[in-house]
Image (tube, rainbow, N blue to C red; front, top):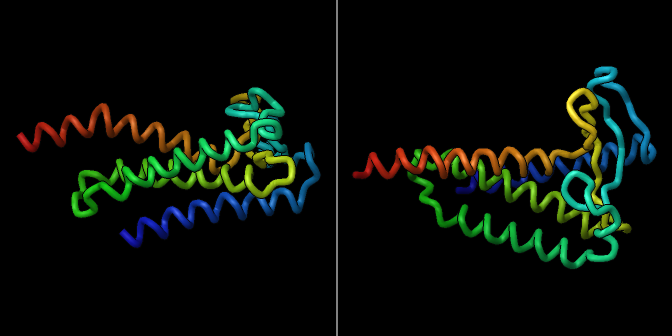
Length: 163
């Protein structure tokens, strides 16, 4: 279990260090093309919700965002620590929950410490979509995907194997 805690902490660290770095090297809305017209590092501050929707809500409803993040992290944490760490068949489940915990905490830290309660975003895939995101968002999306893979496919296999 200790290695999983280190993985979660490392993921949170990657998210936070990357946000600190991008905010120290770029001005807000400044962009560095990594692959021109496809992938840029663009420093933005998201005061809204998912995909930048409801811009400005973070300032007005800061406590709701924070309570939701703490609640989500607590639920994911409970599920994570209740899992059987000896059962190798639950590895995808634990990876999913570790990503969900790290993503929730990573964005919650921004909401708590940023003066405007914004989340720092900077991963800008212009060739795919208009949204700019961060590592915590990536952790959340991959975690949700893996969680559903586990629930809808792997759990059935585990139940069938147990008879």
